[in-house]
Amino acid sequence: MNWRAVVHTLAHLVILLAFCMAAPLAVAFIHKSDNPRWQWEIASFLIPMALSLGAGLWMKRMAPTMTNIGRREGFAVVTFSWLIMTLVGMLPFIISGTTTSLSDAFFETMSGFTTTGATIFSKVEILPKGVQFWRCMTQWLGGMGVVVLSVAILKFLGVGGYRLLKAEAPGGIVFEREKPQIIETAKELWKLYLGISALQVVLLKVAGMTLYDAFCHTFTTMSTGGFSPHTESIAYFSSPWIQWIIIVFMFIAGANFSLYSQVIRLKPGALFKNPEFRLYSAILLVAVVIGLFSVPYSQDAEQHLRDTAFQVVSIATTTGYATVDFDMWPEVMRLVLLLLMFTGGCMGSTGGGIKSARILIYSKALLREMHRLIYPHSVRPLRVGQKVIDRKIVTNIMAFGWAYLGLFIIGCMTVSASGYDLVTSASASAAALGNIGPGLAKVGPTCNWGHLPDATKWVMSILMLLGRLEIFSVIILFTPWAWKR
Image 1 (cartoon, rainbow, N blue to C red):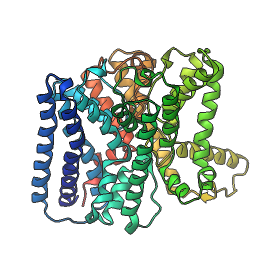
Image 2: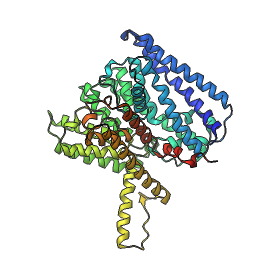
Image 3: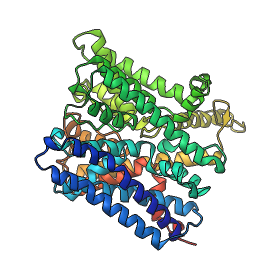
Image 4: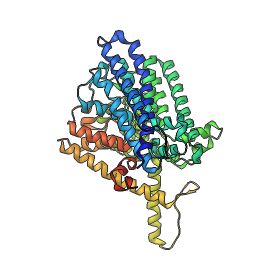
């Protein structure tokens, strides 16, 4: 492990995090009249900013020159950067007096950066405006990834940025461009992310949201995070237009962002020719149809369709917003939502879960093995669209599935050991690992996670990190191979 490269890169990430806190600091200043303890809120951002800048400059002094970033260094930088972001990002919650519990502050911040959306707060309106803004902004930063942003603006990373993106990229995106072009790829991803986010802010403002709410909900929609400045989540807004706008942008955020770059290049056919996008759309459509026939009718047909579509898209894209208490829906629909927690969005999206591409490959691998039972000597390559999937990729995906299942079981056992029922345990584990947020039963859409024991919160926080970084980027650091020269 080349620690000089790790420390030098982390130094720039820590400094970047300090500058990111300038936005919630400005919000705290603007709304200081709403907070009698506004001095503490201002200090809650100034202190972390000073600590981050000081630590970053000290780290740069310790490792003044950049050396090559290899595979080991890439995994170390990504994992340590997310841990550092969480440790620094939790300080505003503690210093402002929002919470006095380290476990709660760490859980809430990890839930933010990993775009999970599980919260320990029973009433989020009590949070100061600046802290609320930071809480939502952590999800937006974590959605596309701070490391991806760093690669886009730090030219010195060069080819090393390729390994960082491979280790952190949102949704397990596969970078097919040449390594020297990876900085341009990162820039393109963030330009798309910024552009679509700006469009949503404008549309939400026109639909009736305040500018503050429009920014906060855009942050948490485009990142498929699900935090809201209101305890009622999106149910706080009675406007059907607001809910339909969020449905559309949740769907957009759950698809592969690299497809949008092709659409911008006047190749709209690439979107519908993509097998994963078609499967993603089909899963959502089938789930909505099941919901329309199984969920009791609401006031009118439009609201029934809107409520059903909203919750299906919200859970499937791992956003976690709520407009109704879906935990009260019929058992068949609760089961559908639980299954959607596992499928997640597409590769290259900001969504969590297993991802539609992996589901597609699992299905094709199963069909191929069944075909071999009848034709044992046949050669049947595994294809997705016109592309033959390399055996190494298939092996990696199969291993990911086993690791995901194992971590899900560990999460279930942890919550069950804390005295919770099976539905709560299973949905909490799936929601944490899939970066979804609300689960069912005692972690349902009208509940919070604050009642979990501290030890359980730490385990859930680790599951959030593992789910966001696609598991392998974290657990590889616990093997001897990562540390051998």
